[in-house]
Amino acid sequence: MGLYSVSTRRLMRRFFIPYFSADTTFVDLSPEVAHHVKTVLRLREGSDVVICDGVGQCFECRLDDLSKGCRVEVRRQWHEEESALSVTLIQGLPHSDKFDLILQKTTELGVGRVSPVVCERCQYPIAPAKRERKLQRWQKIATEAARQSERAWLPEVAELTPFSTAIQNCDAELKLVLWEEAQQSLKDILPSSAPSDVAVVVGPEGGLTAAEVALAVEHGFVVAGLGPRILRTETAGLTLMAVLQYVYGDLNLPPRGQNP
Image (cartoon, rainbow, N blue to C red; front, top):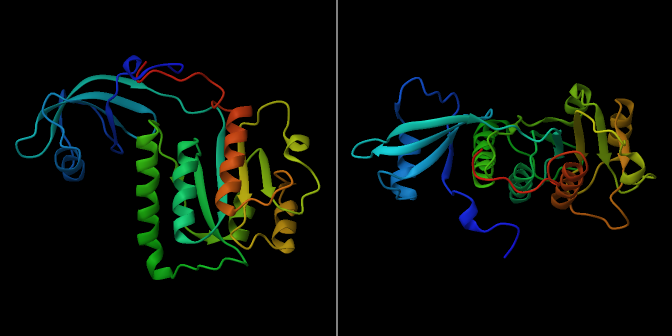
């Protein structure tokens, strides 16, 4: 037995519906969610689910009528807070499969915002005509990862921008840029008191150029390393996210119950 068994948590399927509100006791869900409930998950009337609005509000609902669409009965409502630490990942655009993985796993670790950027060494550019469709795909990946990890808040997935734009517009309290030629370790850089928010820059497969690192430093970023090994782009951001959430966030807290 671990710290808790499945029986100690009331497991309910979780869905995200932006702007969801419970002005009435019974609410009809959107066709997309109704399809997922009835066709994909094959839930039945009487099943309990949790609907989140993406900004912390949660609603325990019971499936009431599935004959046509999907009507739910709202039974109770509560608010869930996120980690006290807000993390923005500025990620040099890697191969599509790798970015999907990065987005999924950093969402599970509590990232607040993911900003894909075009760096000098990006090997897999995205044509402007395809960027809107890519953004929609990324948002779906983040939503599914948030649902699976039982978050109540959806991370923001930003549009693809130039590296310089993301760097210049970043105003986080602590700004870190990971580079294999860093002279300081993460242990030497992290402050003893928790910052309110952190921004992390990770390069693409080919890494960041010296000029890109210099630009980041010019705008207040601190160059940091992650030990003696060279980590892949899909590993570096996840590693630092886990460290930051353990030191400053909620990764060192005990598991929570399903609901308050």
